[in-house]
Amino acid sequence: MTTLELQQMANEVRKGIVTAVHSAKAGHPGGSLSAADVFTYLYFEEMNIDPKDPKKPDRDRFVLSKGHTAPGYYSALALRGFFPVEDLPSLRHIGSYLQGHPCMQHTPGVDMSSGSLGQGISAAVGMALAAKLDGKNYRVYTLLGDGEIQEGQVWEASMFAGHRKLDNLCVIVDNNGLQIDGNVADVCSPYPIDKKFEAFNFHVINVADGNDMEQLRAAFEEAKTVKGMPTVIIMKTVKGKGVSFMENQASWHGKAPNDEEYAVAMADLQKVGEALCQK
Image 1 (cartoon, rainbow, N blue to C red):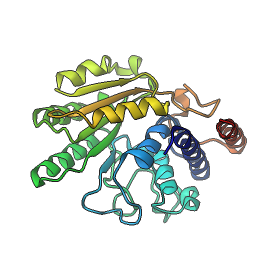
Image 2 (cartoon, helix red, strand yellow; image 1 turned 60 degrees about the vertical axis):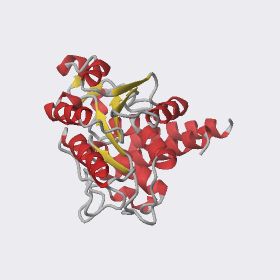
Image 3 (cartoon, rainbow, N blue to C red; image 1 turned 135 degrees about the vertical axis):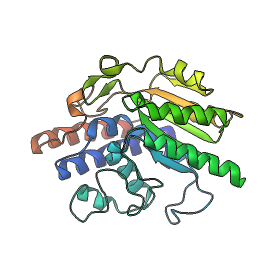
Image 4 (cartoon, helix red, strand yellow; image 1 turned 180 degrees about the vertical axis):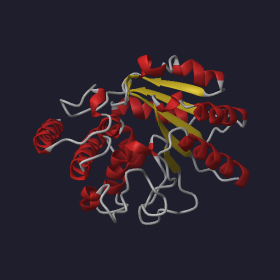
């Protein structure tokens, strides 16, 4: 897809996020919106996947380590054709296959159940090792939150990945600067993130604007050239990106917009979409 097409699709992903969380009256819009661009890039440009055959053996794998941002994940999966977009409003409803956190048993396209912070990267490392042991060449991607990397398990998994030279592993850190309790630097600072991953023998790619498709494209293209070590893409993003009153507000980490807020949010995204159509 062209950069413009990816930008337009990311805006549709954001509409799906806001619609799903509003319908559920619960969920995590802030971190879903900050990661909407990377979800879009992964599923519409980067990964070897087939919505008609979600379990094909040679597919690339993705693990949403920050599993609470499932609304963003589901929106991208739906728009990519894994299940109907019309099902997004069933998020978190009784009987829905779109649970509050991803569930591999029930949701097409989900490679790993996640939600307990820190565990997703461990599963991704295991998948990457399995590919190496089996002589397969699929790649494994995992998305972590910057608050999530306060978990010790993240660094145990990273130590192992670096030691085993898992160059088929691409870790992505959504560095939007905010977690449920406020600024990550104030809660328990993870900085400098890049130096920590370097110490665990990762190739580090810093992305100044993780909501910019061209910068994401350059980062993922670079990651595919790396041999002999895993890669981490650390991307600076805006929490709540695209919705005026949610941007850079920790309070929107885990709550749903009411009807009035939903209308404002969708109007914001509609304006973004119209501006992209003028390009």
